[in-house]
Structure formats: C-alpha cells, structure tokens
Image 1: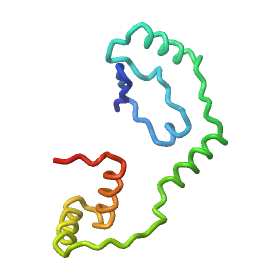
Image 2 (image 1 turned 180 degrees about the horizontal axis):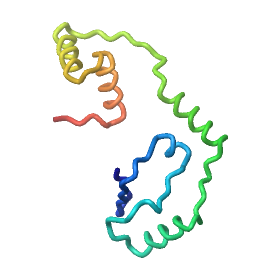
Image 3 (image 1 turned 180 degrees about the vertical axis):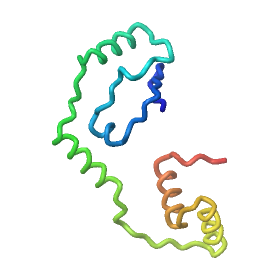
Length: 121
C-alpha cells in the first residue's frame, strides 16, 4: 500500500485496515521513505516520528465537522426540467454508459457548471 505526501512517498508491506485509520493507529515506523525530503520536510518528519505533533481533533470537533458535511451534501430540493425528447434520450444513454441514473448525471452536470468545474471538450 502506498500513501503519497507532497514530495515524499511512504511504502509499507503491511495492510492497514479502515478501522486502524479511523482510530489513528497507524505506526509510521512501519514505513520507509522512498523520496528524498528537503531539510524542512525532514525536520517535520523527525518531529512527527518522535511524537511531538498531536492531533487537535476532539470528539466534539469531529462531530461538528461530520454534521457540517452531512448537511452540505443533502439534496433536499426538487426541480422540474423541460428537455427535448432527443436530449432526454441522449442523457439516458450517457447515464447508462456511466452506470448512473440519468437524473444523477444531469444534476452532476448542473452542479459542475454552476461551480465552474465543467470542462468543455
């Protein structure tokens, strides 16, 4: 399994379970650096390995972030959209190729366009 950092990569032959990740029980001593760190990165890495960095994530803060995330991704508004028959058939065909319902595909396209993330081919 590989975990990528900005300039450094870590490798380990040990399998890490989702439970270990959730409980922050990853032993970074099981990893070896495969890329060269600059001086500042090396200093941070050494400090981290010595346990000088502690998480500031509390149970209260984690719950607050979880609530914010769950509320921000709710699709609680419905809309009616008039499409030509041809556009609807094309949307259904594209959605079938992608393996998603056509409503989800159209919603995704609208969301990306509104947030400036839709790229033209």
